[in-house]
Image (cartoon, rainbow, N blue to C red):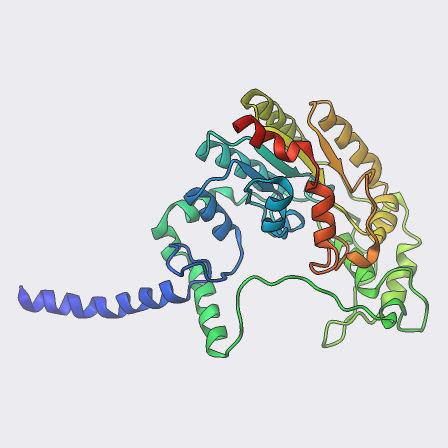
Length: 356
């Protein structure tokens, strides 16, 4: 028996060694062992943080709601928030994550919930919440998850190469050359903004296939056919649209508003800003704005406050403040938007007053 026990113990050594390495290099600090060091930002870090320390005010949405400086938000509103938004979040995932947050924290009293033509499109039917909830609530599921182990190994390789890891922020450095096409044509928007529109056209549920030519780039990712893309965009008509609203998700938002009203949760729907190129060559060119107006009217009928920077923008931000068509430059633009959205906003502070 002693020999068998010794053999078993010996066999366990490489397993224990591997999981020791896993705990040291896993990029999300799942178990909170790294003393607040900067970790990779994801739904895992955000939802785990909320489960460990639920806040009474939350943000939900995709990457356009995910990148706020939360210290700045706290200074502007006088309260702490949990940012549960994450890059690539679908509408269905954000809705389910709201109910998870409400279930885990009966004192939840404030929610800013992003609504956008992009996340409400019928072409996006993703919902990974069952998988997400399993990962954040079950440590063994996390330890043995293939993707999480792959992320750990990638982190290990980067660290061995001396690469600084952790959350990064989008920042652009634009020059006049960015406003000139490959043929010397003056462009109304930066090349990367025009290319971003082309990317959106290719997303499911936005435009019919083949509406625009493929984007051509060099080895450094610079757009080589911005002028060609612009010419195609300027000839687009609503007949090229493949857009429709996911009515099931829209109805779920109406029900979410009723839930918040019943529970005394101060809910605000936030239509996030998009740059001028998206406004002109997508919302208007494809006739999507009319659908957005209907969505806005449907949500307004619930009595829920709406901050609209997308459909009928209450504030128009200069295109130079955007990193691409959807996202602000983190250095020059994001702080500006944060102030507009949160400073002096009674709804952002309402929940805190209710709990006082």
